[in-house]
Length: 303
Image: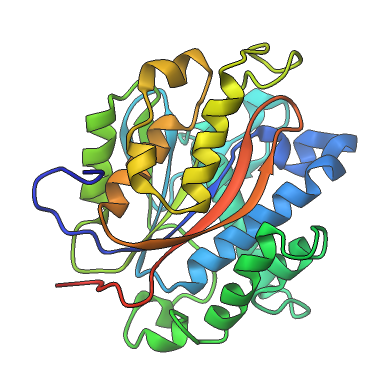
C-alpha cells in the first residue's frame, strides 16, 4: 500500500506538483524566459488551486542532499545557478527544489495582492494557451470555484489558518535525500500528512533528464516510457503507481523528482484523489510537469 507506515491516517486534502529548473525564474532565464511562460503559468495555476483547496498546513517537499526539515522562515538563493535571486531572509539554506518552491509561493502571493488579479486567473491565462479540452481547462473550473469559496474553498473553513492568511505561504519545508529508499520516502509522506489538520503539499519534482540527445544526461530510450508513467500517475492521481517507481532505474534515468513523488504517494495513502495535469513539457530534454490533486468528492477527511 502506498502509505504503509504504521496506521497513520492521511489528512492530505490537496497537492500540487511542479518542476524546479532554475530557468523557471525569469532573472536566470534572461532572453529565454518566454520559452517557459506556459510552464510558469501552469505552476502558478497549480499553486493557486492548492491554496484554494483550504489546507490548514502547507508544506513544500523536494529532493536535496539529505533528508532535513526547515522552518517556515528558511531562505534560499539561486546564486549557485548564476543570479543571486533570494527568497526569505537570513542565510540561504534551502536546496534548489525548495528554493524554487518558495519562489513559486511568493509569485502566487504577489498575484493575489495585485488589484487587477482575481483568484483563478492563473489557470485561465494558462488555459488560453492550450487547445480546447486541454489539461489546464480541467483544473480551471475548480480553481475558480474554490477561490470563490465553493467546494473546498476558504469560505468553508471556519476557524482555519486561512482565516488569518490570505496569500499562499509555507508552514515548513521538507527536503528528502536524492537517494532515499522507497520505504523511507513513503514513511516520511505518511508522517507529514498525519494529524488532525488539513494538509496541503507543494511537491517539487522534475522528470527524466535523458529524454533527448541534448538533455543533460543524453538520450536513453528507456527515459520516455518512464517519464510517461509518471505523467499518467499524476494525471490520474495514482499514488500506488508513484509508490512503485524503482529508485535504481530512476537514478539511472536522472529522474530527480522520484523521492519527492514517493513522499507524495506516502502522504496520499489509499485515499481517493482526483488528478488534473496542467503541463507536460520537455523543452531542454528534461521532463517538466505540473499537476494538481484534490481529495475526491465524498472521501472522508477524518475518521
